[in-house]
Image (tube, rainbow, N blue to C red):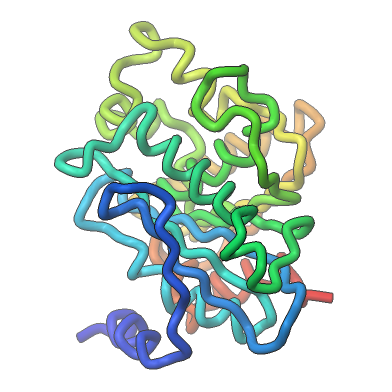
Length: 263
């Protein structure tokens, strides 16, 4: 068993999370990990990757959530419907992410000592695309997936991100149900490159040795965002695609350093 797999297994031995169901589908669930004490605790919404497909689940983000709690953050680890038998895609995957975030304002999570004025969106790989999309929800047209958010974020941490859907190829076309020519409005709403600039600070953490998603895509995003006047930071780290979600790796330590310590 790899060291990362061991960390996933051991994270189950820590203080159990509180599970919330935000819909009727088996995958419409989110686990809230929170520190000891009454708070209010700043919140990090955690979105896993996997090119929007099974069998990838929120399980791989649990060690990261445990580390966030140790640092004083509450962490909402979100599961969502993915492509295939889950019935994900457009708009279901986006609806799930939006509903899970807004569920923080419902009585159960709201009463758990959360500071909803300090919500950070954190995503890895395809989850980073969803985090970048969710950060722009206040500007989504009325009636579109994610419109009229009840909970808004103050910043985004995108790790090894899919920040250009055209580079993602076939999985992105499956996610949106067509090409940019066939469903242009969906691409305008979902593609981070088409949503520049976001109104909140964005940090991208990307390993220069990432062979799954090239660091060149993050460099291109940052160049375009800076040209548009966005508050955006790119941190290039040694390592590969999964390094940012492994708390033992320098990439994660760099990423969480950008978050800083809760006040």
